[in-house]
Each structure stands twice: as structure tokens, then as C-alpha cells.
Length: 425
Ligand SMILES: *[C@@H]1O[C@H](CO)[C@@H](O)[C@H](O)[C@H]1NC(C)=O
Ligand SMILES: *[C@@H]1O[C@H](CO)[C@@H](O)[C@H](O)[C@H]1NC(C)=O
Ligand SMILES: *[C@@H]1O[C@H](CO)[C@@H](O)[C@H](O)[C@H]1NC(C)=O
Ligand SMILES: *[C@@H]1O[C@H](CO)[C@@H](O)[C@H](O)[C@H]1NC(C)=O
Ligand SMILES: *[C@@H]1O[C@H](CO)[C@@H](O)[C@H](O)[C@H]1NC(C)=O
Image 1 (cartoon, rainbow, N blue to C red):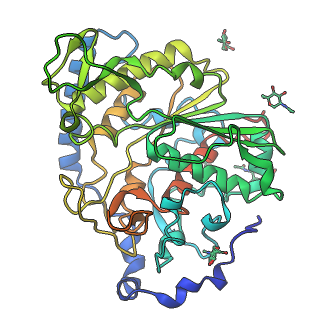
Image 2: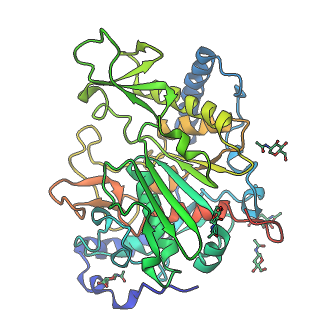
Image 3: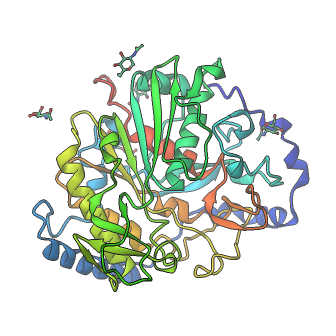
């Protein structure tokens, strides 16, 4: 395969290794291997989540859920293609291994990486974080071969919906595909828009292959609204948990549709700014955030079932990508390292990930999980830190590009790969 834009050997940063990265090198191999999880605390946690999910279903009276889904199976059921049909290969279980042929592209040569995510350009001196490949335990995922992927995606409309993490994944996929396009100017944003944090819609077209990659900003997936009449003064806006985002109609006529949500379901983005939950005409002032999230994702599932033609559209929900703040509550200081952690330190046990899993497992419709929580939880090395466009504000939520979101896309492409000898997905 070609890596036309990368030239790892000439990379200046290799001579400027930070002391930290030298220290990390010796024990690296043992540290990246995956550690056993604490099954006891995990089972307890799962029980808690199942209990709360089940109560929500009972409350909402949804009819499409199997109340006790089989944990851990659905992610490989019902997906088209070889990789998905082979249950002995869980592509989400594995470890990060050093691969000098990575990264798969250079952000400085890809106009669709926003400045804030291009850590190398923003001065990050180490580059080990770019040179890691995700290796599942029981199988190999195919190497990213840009020409065959471009052929496979010809004529398709690929839509990402979610928060800035969805935007990062969208940017990553564009850059991955652009390495196979000679005339970079033939890849363009359909409205001539620049990537900004607030923009609601971005669409990039690959003229040579007639591929469209779109991003819709919808951090809650459900509808934002002004407060109902007679709401208390502190309520400045609401999130309507029983209504999908008003732009959702524009998502459905697509070939791949990839959702994510989670990062905005925090006190800081809701109660602290006067943003409260609402169901019907009723404010739910005391509703805990995880309950609200569960309600919203259940609304999403119901919407997906009714509105998406799953004969055409391959629907994915990408699970939560954990942050690595030193202090989660204040989000002020970061623990950015040069190498991944050897274990997740429990960071993969995330309520937002669990809720999405439970809801998706329970759907009869063939929606798939992109269950990247565990793999991403290991990557405390791969966030922006101070190498963003605002160095004074450390960022241990967003990811450097190239980096972890590329691996999410490699899995997305793997799971949508056609069976050999059958029709393309
Ligand atoms: C990416 O391209 C920039 C500009 O050409 C170059 O300075 C940098 O070394 C490249 N990075 C990698 C990882 O090859
Ligand atoms: C499934 O994957 C396993 C592990 O990679 C492999 O040994 C096996 O042959 C595969 N099974 C099928 C039916 O392809
Ligand atoms: C591009 O793809 C769309 C959707 O598949 C199709 O309707 C259209 O005819 C294609 N255009 C060209 C120029 O191939
Ligand atoms: C999807 O495919 C199934 C089986 O091939 C068919 O029965 C169904 O009508 C199709 N649904 C739509 C919306 O095209
Ligand atoms: C699919 O076929 C190609 C060549 O036709 C082969 O190289 C590849 O290994 C096959 N992949 C699988 C998963 O069987």
C-alpha cells in the first residue's frame, strides 16, 4: 500500500525526544500488553447498569427491547461481511503495538485536519503516539489499503453525527482516504466552509470517486429547545430527551451512518449553564445525567428503527471515548504521557459506554457497535494536552491526529468490508 504523504525517517521530532519518552521506552512492550480486568467490579457494575436500564424500559414501555440482552454478542451479529461473521474474532479486544509504518497520513498535508488537532504542527516533540497500531488478540485486521477502500466506497454517502469527537473521526477518515487521491483539490467542502467548532454541517466530496463524507454537529443527538413557559429562572435552555435533533431528517439517506454522544452529558454542559432536561412538556429538573442519557439513547434507538432503511444504511454507534484528566471534575490538568497505559485503570468502565451497549444490544434492528471505549481508554498518551490551538488550556479529551481516531476508522472499514466473493457492502 502507498503512504505517499508520510516520510517517517525524515521526521525531525525523533531527535527531540523528551526525557519522559526515553524513560518510557524500556518497559514499553510489557506495558502495552493488555491486563486482565477486574471481573468482580465489572460484574457488579454491569448489574447496576442492567438494573437501571431495565427500569428505564419499564418506565418508557418500549416494545422493541429484549429485556435481558445477551452481553457481548450483538456486536458481531448481523454485520455483513467476513470480519463480522467470525465470532471468534472480537476486533475490539486487543492491544496497541509499535508499527514504524504508521502514521497512515500526515496532518500537515491534509487540509481537513483542524489546526487544533494537529499536535505535531502545534509543537508536540514526541511522535511515538502516532506509531501505534491496534492489534486484536485473535485475528489481524486488514492493513489499510487506500485504493481498495476508495473503490469500495465509490458512490457512497458517509455521515457522522455527534460531538467534536465525531468531527475528529470524520477528519481522520477524510485524511486516510486523501492519501489515495493525487489531485488534492478534487476533494472539497461542498459549501466552501471552513471547519469550525460550532458549525452544524460539513460535507466533503471526493470528486474522483463520488464519495461524500458528512458531519452533523449534534452533541446530544436529541433536540435542544428554549425552556417551557413558567420554567424557573435558572432554566435557560432544555434538552428534549424524547425528540431527536431537528436536523435528523438529513441523516437518514446515507450508506454509512456513525453516531456518537457522551462528552456533553456533564454538569458543565448542562446544569452549570442552565441547560436542563425535558420530556414532553415537563421539565425534569432532578433527573440524573446518566438517566437522561439513557432516555435519549432509547429515543434514538426508536427513531433509528422507524426512520432508517437498514437494507441500505449501515448504522453504527461508536461508544464513549474516555478522557484522561488528572482531575475529572475540574478538567484543568492533564496526564498526557508518551506511551499508552498498560491497563485502563477502570477508565473503560464508563456509564455512557455501558448504556449505549445495552441499548444497541437490545435493538432488533441491525445496528452495530463501534466499541472503542477499551482501546481508547489505554491511550493517555494520545490527547492534545497543550499541543492544541489554545496551549494555555490543557485538553485531555480530544485526540491528536494522526492518532486514535484513525484506529476507530480502521475498525469501521474492517467491519464494513464485504465477505470475499460476495457483493460489496
Ligand atoms: C509532516 O509534514 C511536515 C511538513 O511537511 C513535516 O515537517 C513533518 O515532519 C511530517 N511529519 C511526519 C510524521 O512525517
Ligand atoms: C475466524 O477467526 C479465527 C481467528 O482469526 C480463524 O482462525 C478462523 O479460521 C476464522 N473462522 C472463519 C470461519 O473464517
Ligand atoms: C454519485 O453517487 C450518487 C449516489 O450513489 C449517484 O446517484 C450519482 O449518480 C453518482 N454520480 C456520478 C457522477 O457517478
Ligand atoms: C429490506 O429487505 C427485506 C428483505 O430483503 C424486505 O423484506 C424489506 O421490504 C426491505 N425493506 C425496505 C425498506 O426496503
Ligand atoms: C480475500 O481475498 C483476497 C484476494 O482475493 C485475499 O488476499 C484475502 O486474504 C482474502 N481475505 C479473507 C479475509 O479471506
